[in-house]
Amino acid sequence: MATVGMGRGARGRRATTTAALLAATVTAALAVGCTSGVGPGDDGRGSPKESRQQSSPSQAGPSAIAVKIDNAARARPHTGVDAADVVYTEQVEGGLSRLMAVYATRLPETVGPVRSARESDLELLRQFGRPTLAFSGAQKKLLPLIDEAPLRAQTPGNAADAYFRDSGRPAPHNLYLRPERIVPEAPGKAALTTGFRYGSAPAGGTATDSRTVRYPAARFTFTWSDSRDRWLVGMDGAPATTADGERMTATTVVVQYVKVRESAFRDFLGNNTPYTQTVGSGRAEVLRDGRTWDVHWKREKAADGTSFTTGDGAPVNFAKGQVWVVFAEAS
Image (cartoon, rainbow, N blue to C red; front, side):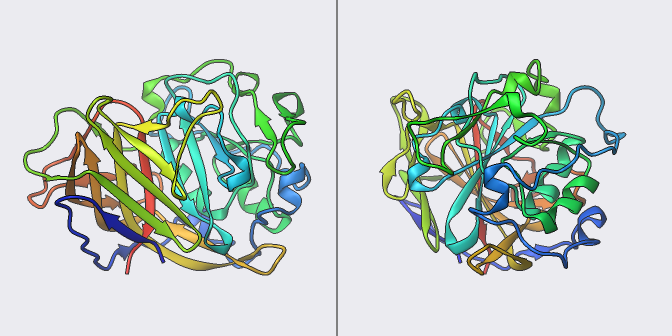
């Protein structure tokens, strides 16, 4: 279970999340096995074929590129995550965490370390039409779901020239992606079909110095910096930095309370792979400008983005810049 720690003036209130049924394209195969954290997917085996499905009718033009990012201690510091438009955090086997970085407005030269996909990714990515998903591979039992999903899967198995290994890091925490070799140019702002709104902050909010979200074996801390007008990102009690030594920051942080259930998948050690359910509704907290707002989130269908509203139903605007969405388990 994920728990939240709050700084000055913030209150921790937990509520039950009403979760919707899974999207039909994913549910048909939920009874097949799980992605391994260090198994076949991470050494280039178990690579899916590129999906033959077409883009969603609701989205025209280029789609976003999403990259699965390793977040084990030995995988840090990260490369290229600071260029993402949205960074999602999810709980994986053993209570650890993993990131998904979504790029639309710019592409970094290198991203990584890259790791394997999870079945939850398929539901989360449906909002982007037919995006490109870059990952190291997946367990063989998950491959049919990936093949059927409306996405363009890019792994070392079918895009070898886009990936390389850093000999100075231990495997499997040393696989990196050159995004421009699979997506020639940034698709642009229109590819961010997340449902997020940007603009002036809503009225009210509670002054907040910091916020910590804990998974069983990982935690994220966001500390407000007046001088930088950003939330400074911390991971597992230490400052999160880029490979260039720059502090990782976010202009908006969303703590989104969702249903996290057991899946039918297990890793090679027998640990169950948590399924993070992002279709449904529930409560969330939006952090921006050194303040926190308690809000309501809703995503009716997998093809929809997620809306965030205040108690009176008014849309909540995010600050311009990188958004981190931390999926925390609802109780």
